[in-house]
Image 1 (cartoon, rainbow, N blue to C red):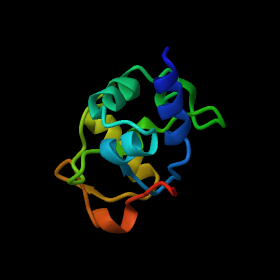
Image 2 (cartoon, rainbow, N blue to C red):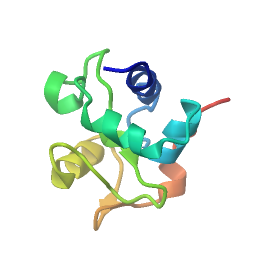
Image 3 (spheres, rainbow, N blue to C red):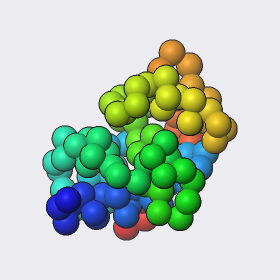
Image 4 (cartoon, helix red, strand yellow):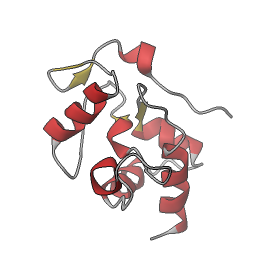
Length: 109
């Protein structure tokens, strides 16, 4: 695991249940424009909800979506990602976040 991955995972932990963020916002908060590196870090996440449950070490990569609110990339499939989000109160319709702007989490600078 790289320092960038660790940084991205720690930032992702800040996204609360019931909210989502984007790969781009996560990359910017990490100080990089390497959006694909964020996606790769999410894919390599050893602390996901389905792997380790909802403990304090969980990195909620299921809360990261693309910039238009569409579900994108999840190691366990988009149905599992949608199920986890719905469990947290996020409305998902046709693999897209409903009321995207209302549930979008942005990082404080």
